[in-house]
Length: 120
Image 1: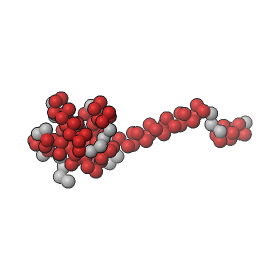
Image 2: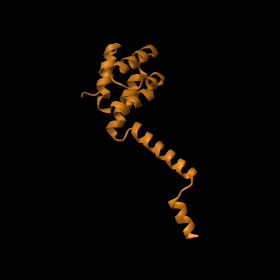
Image 3: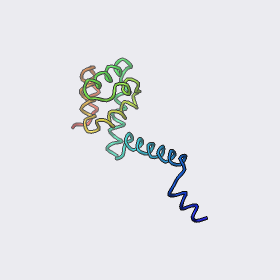
Image 4: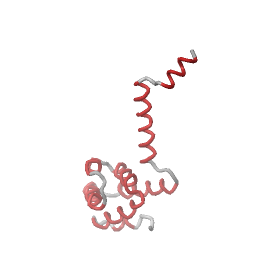
């Protein structure tokens, strides 16, 4: 019986291999997109609060400006809601997310929301 467990462990079934790949992919996605530190959580919440304050037209303009500022895949950005837009900004350009937001807000113009951003 022990031999069967060893063989099963060494040579997993195709079903187990697919399951393991899927679990690994899910873990990678969640750690990439989600906030990991308190500072990340605060930044995530701040960006989301700002985007929720935009009208739908302003939000569309914001996303259009993002497309011109940095290379977030257009298909992902066009279909993104406010929360997904924050996730995309942080996953593709975490270090520049505040600057990207500031630049885009100033072009809309929504300078009142720029004041909510942390100083970089």
